[in-house]
Image 1 (cartoon, rainbow, N blue to C red):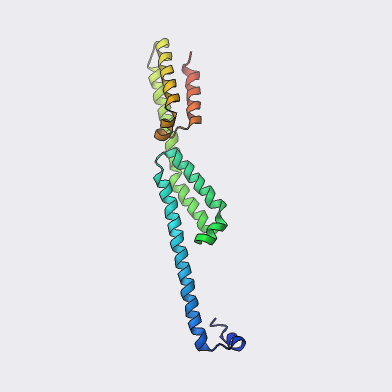
Image 2 (image 1 turned 180 degrees about the vertical axis):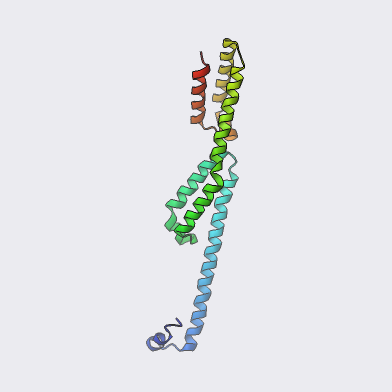
Length: 174
């Protein structure tokens, strides 16, 4: 407005005294809008992080992170309008989330592998084949009955549990 002051004087009859308060008002409005967007953006990011931190199961946390990252990437235009996140901001946020929570998947896999090794050691320790098969049937029943608990405790999904049972069936069933 200050740069176009002469144009406004000619076109609308504004004087320099009329333009100065308008400039100050516009500066106040735009800085207020920017502050509001920053507050909304910060609140949005805080909400995302708190949602992930609230999930205790490692596998479910990984799934939640993937859902959030997919949503962020799919809704970039909406996020730009609503909370002022640019495409670069979204990419940065996705990378931060991935860096923070990608190790969760590795931890889940290690826990699952350790669980399988423990079961195998228990079965291999039984020399009598008949007793070993009985023990395997007990373990198999436990794995099927406790599927929901295994997901929460160790991130062992039903599919991974069925795969584990199939591998142990192959090696220890009659």
